[in-house]
Length: 138
Image (cartoon, rainbow, N blue to C red; front, side, top):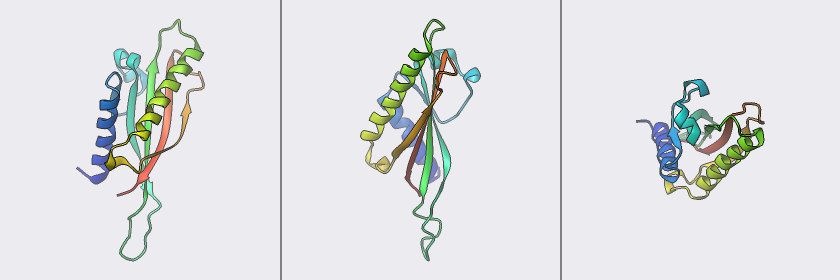
């Protein structure tokens, strides 16, 4: 496995250990493709968005860059829940990732959360978040 692939696997396994009630995967699927029971408990999907910003000086070509990572959260609530309740469920998922980055294992110590976006209540009864992260590259 590549260094980047091993890093992504470590992020996924660490999240799985921290939040066993959530589904954690490295394979993105649309809401329609997901199992309802997984959506009810909430899903974190870890995807790579690439790497860049390399030093590129003599002897360090394509090194010392930044690896961009997204954690995509997906959840569904019962139809009788309000859009505000869906938003609160999204906030809970965001807070879980904030807690994750405050307690990283040494191999992931450079992983930082740079921001997040959420559904804006537009997907009710579904909820979705996208958390942007970066870490030192390979």
